[in-house]
Image (cartoon, rainbow, N blue to C red):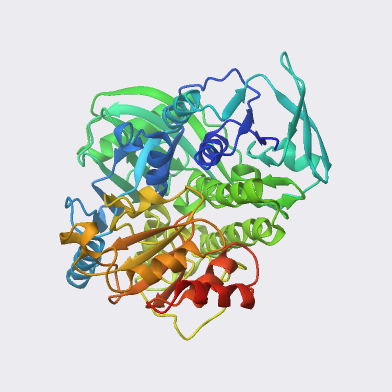
Length: 561
C-alpha cells in the first residue's frame, strides 16, 4: 500500500510522521524548505504534561531536557499578588497519591497546588528533536524543497504534485495537510476557514536577565508604570533555560507599528518595575510581534485528505496553546489512519477524527470568544462588579496553565466511537472519553512500566485493577482468579489488544476492567470480566456498531473461568 503523504514539516507534521512509523505505517513528509529551522527564541511553545510525554515517547528525547518546567505561576494586578500557584514537584508516588495531594492542598489553599507543571520550550529546539528522531526512521522520507501545488484523489488513493528544485509527483494512500495557517491543502480542497483576525496582538522579546522569581511564570495585569508608548494592560513573563525569558506585552487594538525604540523602552520600564526601580542588566536576543487569530476550518476531512494543526484551527488568545492542540490532532489521527492503512478503510473511524477534534477545538474557541469581551472590553463586567478581577484572573490562569474550559485537555464525551451503555459499566475518576491517568502497570512480559509508555502502538489497552499484584511476580497470579477468562476475552477482541494489570487506579474498585484507546482516552470501565460488553465496547471504539453474533462468540470463547 502507498505511504501516507504529510504536507508540512512543522512540529505537527513531524509528530504525525513519527506516530505513524511507530505503528508500522510509512509516510512521506513534503517540506517546502531546506530541512532546517530558523533559530528564534521569541517563538516558543507551552506544552501540557501529556503532550510532552507524547513527544518523549515518540522521539526518545524528553523535551524537558531542552525546555523549562515551571516551578510556579504568579499572577499580579497592579502591585498586588492575586494568585500564587505552585506545581507538584514531589518525586514518585502513584497517581492516586498525587490526586490525594492535590485534593488536600486544594482544601487548604486553592492556589497552592496545580498538578503537573507546563513545559516551556523554543519551537526550533522541539522541531530539531523531531527531525533528529526522523533521521533514523526507515519508514519516513522527508522530501525537502517540495512545495505542493496540486492534489488529485481517486477511490484507491491520492496523488500530489510539488514544484521546486526537487518537485515531482507523489502517490499516497492518504494526504494530511499540516501546512499551517495559509494551508495550500485547505485551499486546494476548497475548504473555508472562517473566524476572527487579530483577536490579540503582542509585542515579544526574548532576553537573558535575572528576575525576582527564578523559574516561575508571571502574568502582570495593569502594571503601575506606564511612562512611554501605548499603555500595556497585560505582560506575561515565561522562563526558558539558561536564564532566558520570553516577555509578551498585550498591545491595544489597531495596527500601531512596534518600533525598536518603543520595544526597548517597554523592556526597560518593565524590568525596572519588577526590580525596585532600576533596570537590571539584560541581553536582548530576539524580538517579534505575535498576532493571534481565531479560525476553524469548516471540514477537517475531504475524502482521503485531512487537515491538522494550524491548517485546521487557529487559537491562542487568553493563554490557550495552539501547538498543544495540534499535537493532539496528530495523536488522534495517527492510530485511526494506521488501522485503516493496515486493515482497510473504515469510514466511521476516519470520520470520527473530525467529529472529536473539531468539536473539542470549537468548544475551546467558543469559551475564549465568550471570555474576551469581559476581559478586554473597557466597559465590561469588570467596571462595575466588585471583586470581578479575581474571577477574570482565574480565566486567564486556566488558559495559561491548561485548566478549565480555556485549557484543560479535552474529553470526547460525545464521540461517535463511544460504546452503548451497559449495566456492567462502573464509574472511575476518569470519565469516558477523557485521557487516562498515568499509573504504573505490569506488562505482558512481567515488567513494570508506565501506562503512557504503552500508548501509540495501534493496539487497544485492557487494564485490570488487581490490588496486590505489584508485590508478586507475574507468574504467581497470571493463571489465577479471573486472569485466564480476561486473557481469553482480550484474545477474542476484533483487533489486537494488550492486557495490562495495575494495583490501583483513581476511583476504581478491585477487578475493574478499563478499555483504553491507543491515544490514551478511556473507552469504558466495566465491573469485572464481561467478555460480551468488552467486545461491544472495542467494536464501537474502532468505528463500527457492535455485532451481537460476534460478541456472543467472544463470550463463548472466554469460557466461564
